[in-house]
Image (cartoon, rainbow, N blue to C red; front, side, top):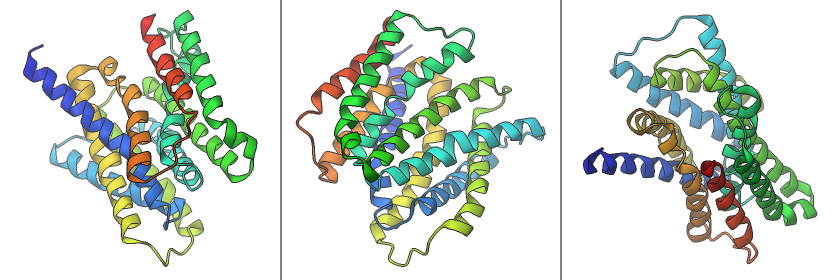
Length: 289
């Protein structure tokens, strides 16, 4: 692999880290004046529009088998609509940096599910130790939240549940028939937006005082972290493979935390260093086996 290829791969990867890492900050801005249901629907609808235009421009064929679309529907709920809502709802009471750090547990949950559901991805001692360290990090991070109870407790639990949804979704992807990744992403996001449409029409409250910052953040969430990020994601997998892609698990929580602390002036606990160390160790250990 020549230096130009390496540079392009890392540029794409860091672009993906920036899009997904900053999405927690933009979600926090969005839910300040827009209800979570509307944030999710607008984000998915815009993402579906972006991906549909790309699929059409590239001349991809759309699958017609109902089983494939049934799979898209399941992934739309588990991997998009539900976790997007849980994160948006949770960030009404949880800082964006903390939310990003909780989401870092996702790859560790994935390896636990994969042990039972994927034939060639079994646990070893390094993965087990990594999982234990990651869970300990979450416990230390959310200890004050859990002790306080109330809305913050449920918000932290909602974001942890969103991470679980993403982990389950990564297993579902492995079980689907093979098809164009771009078409798959487009189909899933379209189905997710259709799932959210009646929910938005029936349950979303009136948003009469939407700030310009919130509206711009919602628009960007749909175009950037949902639409553009999906295109970059498949480019990275195609060029460098899933192992190279897994590097983002080390970087996204850092970006989320720094954006929250520096750009949103979120308070930084003096006891946060230990959860950080445990998370990094937890993410690094599975690769040692």
